Amino acid sequence: MSALKNEMPLRIIISGASSGLGLALALHYLERGATVAAFARRGDILQTLATKFPGQVFYYALDVRDGQALQNAANDFIARAGAPDIVIANAGVSIGTLTEFAEDIDTFQQVMDINVVGMVKTFQPFVAAMRAAQSGTLVGIASVAGFRGLPGASAYCASKAAAIAYLESLRVELRGSNVKVVTICPGYIATPMTTHNPYPMPFILDADEAAKRMVRAIERQVIFTVIPWQMDLVGHVLKYLPNFIYDRLFVNAPRKPRVND
Image 1 (cartoon, rainbow, N blue to C red):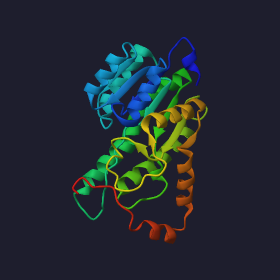
Image 2 (image 1 turned 30 degrees about the horizontal axis):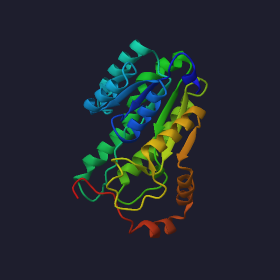
Image 3 (image 1 turned 90 degrees about the vertical axis):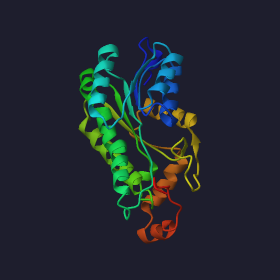
């Protein structure tokens, strides 16, 4: 992915671009001269980003659950800038849920809609144009949390496991089209989403460092990567632990706060 060295700047789509990892990724690409389409619900922050990088930012205030809004944004961007080189489906939420509480069902639905269906809706409007161009990379931000189910984080873990499986399906579907699919599973990243986690977060990275490592993985078109590498080891150990050991280790683990806690 050396296109940043060519005359034509890279064209990047990033969802969840108003804060945390999404904003860090947007800044990283913008500072390297890329054209970035920033998707997020907070249009005021996106407008500030566009002011800071005049002529480089297309911004769209939208919710990734709104398929029509994403289609309209994609149509506008493609008409004005062409097919994107990279689409990063980064938007996501993490909220504690417990199945025993009826009020958590809506929260569970929200997490799945944003983290999984929102990823599909982010990619879908761009696939035909990227196929026609016979180039481009679709990047899905999953998580190490998708490797095993953590107590109190059922919605988040389920959504990230679903994202990993979805991205693998998509990768095989697009094989031979020259459109690549990259799955990135971060460990802990210091963002607003992790601020209130009531448990230790080993090997945590700040958002800027995580973004740099992710960009390198995208440039190399690594099919599947865990960042940082230490969490790859932790994740794989947990993944292959016998169930009776895993259950004993995590039954009393601190849990992600619920909306109603």
